[in-house]
Image (cartoon, rainbow, N blue to C red):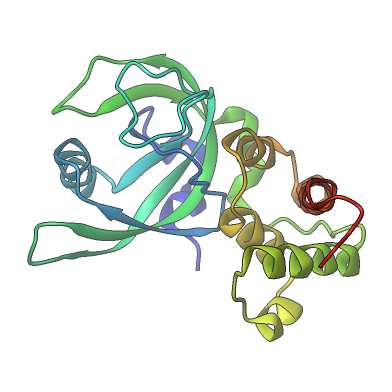
Length: 223
């Protein structure tokens, strides 16, 4: 299902959007990202977004790996705009929301804080192709699935392998890139990959490098 914003084109996207800096959290176009929101500044951000098109910009801090991310932390210049497609409030006041990725953007200029959360003027023009399904293919699908399967076994991550096998290439790469526990710089590289073909190739390489590093750490004797 596409968003009405996709149908209207980039001109319908807001130029100033709230920013949600979150270490290791990756949102890609057409992906779904569940979030548990509990900090007062981000509760205010969600409330504001619900009354203004439901758009939130997910970005990653450049060097901070802890949450909450300080307001002065430098951010990567490329993020992804997502639309709130579901939300639920708990008895404790937390909000469970889900974002659907719409289009990547480049931060042009940050605005002053509003209600405690960061905002920025953004430009979507370099990522117009995000509005449409990526028809590209993974260069070596069995390689990617094999590497991810070994990586998941290493990290003790459960997965629905039947669903993975049946997913089309865009859904497969998008879902795996978002859920794999990778460093922020690696997540950012996946975000900035131009298309599914290159993102799938990069994801395969990242999985293989992680497996190789684990092997080297264990040394020549496995037990």
